[in-house]
Image 1 (tube, rainbow, N blue to C red):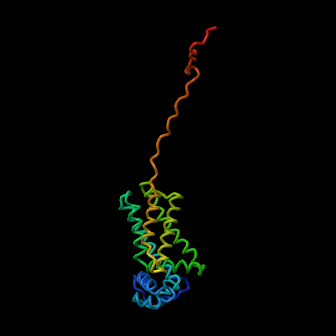
Image 2 (image 1 turned 135 degrees about the vertical axis):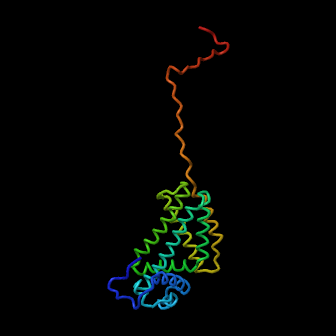
Image 3 (image 1 turned 120 degrees about the vertical axis):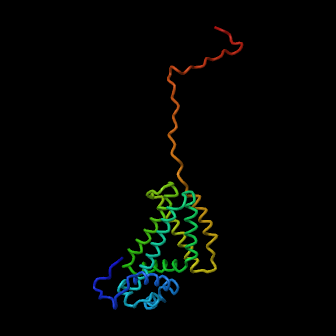
Length: 238
């Protein structure tokens, strides 16, 4: 857990042990429903049932609060992927993980909205850009571990190609979810279904290695018999 920022005075009142976690949970609800620009730290503090000064004590700014909220959502996402890898048979893992990710993108619009708000914020606030980039990289790595598990049949370190698959999957799901956020008439489900078929057909377990085929031994000159020419019928002997 990050410590309070240096130079900050003590909180206005002794904070409860779970005050920071309550602020993050309240921030997810308030920011997700009202949007980053419309929501205020006062509303977040009221929702969490704590003093407004604790928002600045723990996070320093509303920008940092949004980052902390999105980091917690990402942590829960990665924990669930890890659980799926541990509990799902490998032959069912790809379909199960893809269906779960699709459901998350369509049934949790508030969480998706916060994610896109953070992306925009990372472009505007250069102090947050490294943290946003790190968050993206962590998501790629966790998806890549799942892809590697599907392709190799065991929990193994992902290859460069596994990571490429992960980036493609995440970019497509993010794009479809954002489209749905901006256009409520857009139905992403048929597109998700097509994307799932494409990716599942492409992500295949590597074929088991086979020993190299033996090359036929070349026969030496002594073993080669030159066929004799048959005499042409009616040919005259000399």
